[in-house]
Length: 93
Image 1 (cartoon, rainbow, N blue to C red):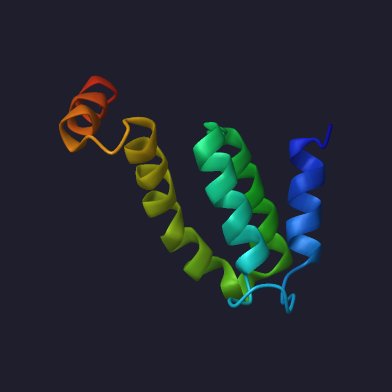
Image 2: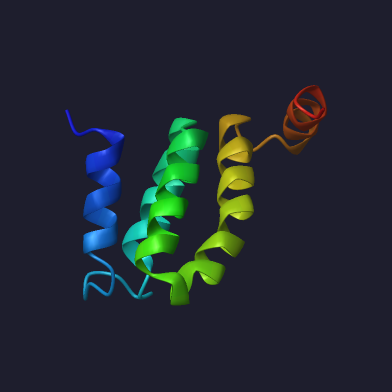
């Protein structure tokens, strides 16, 4: 089984890959996967390591994180926006 760190290493190493439309595509894809898996610490670790390796692209990646997390929450609620609203209110501090 691939560890979180191995997945992060691979995404960072593939920066600029022709397999993705965006230069940071590999990491953006990984962040989406982590959000859907509920791995919020994985998102934080991936971003911190990415920022150190590719600071010029860090702002764009950072700005995408909230949408990725919210989309994962909506998917988890089955697309039911009322359920999403209840989930959001239950988890707000």
